[in-house]
Length: 85
Image 1 (tube, one colour):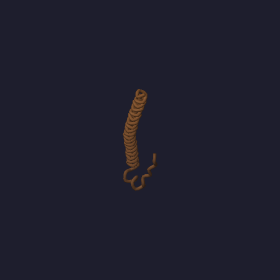
Image 2 (cartoon, rainbow, N blue to C red; image 1 turned 180 degrees about the vertical axis):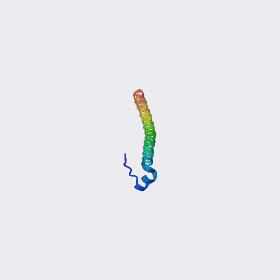
Image 3 (cartoon, rainbow, N blue to C red; image 1 turned 90 degrees about the vertical axis):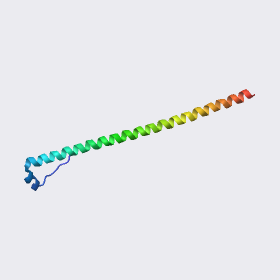
Image 4 (cartoon, rainbow, N blue to C red; image 1 turned 180 degrees about the horizontal axis):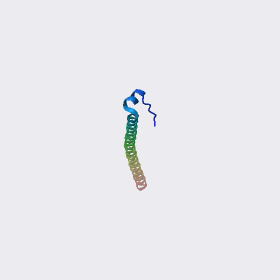
């Protein structure tokens, strides 16, 4: 928490109670801004993480089908050579 020094002229105008109330208001608004910023960053991180996981899964599925397709043709080729003799 930061320390806020209220200038003497402002403290004279607002009185000590008014200056303390102003400082309390500033501290509360600062806390609210921090909470809002943390919430925003969390949401952005979660969205980015979900996008990255989705992309990784699609890459995995693509390579899985390529491997299965290659295995299928390797078996067909082997059977073709075996039965041709």
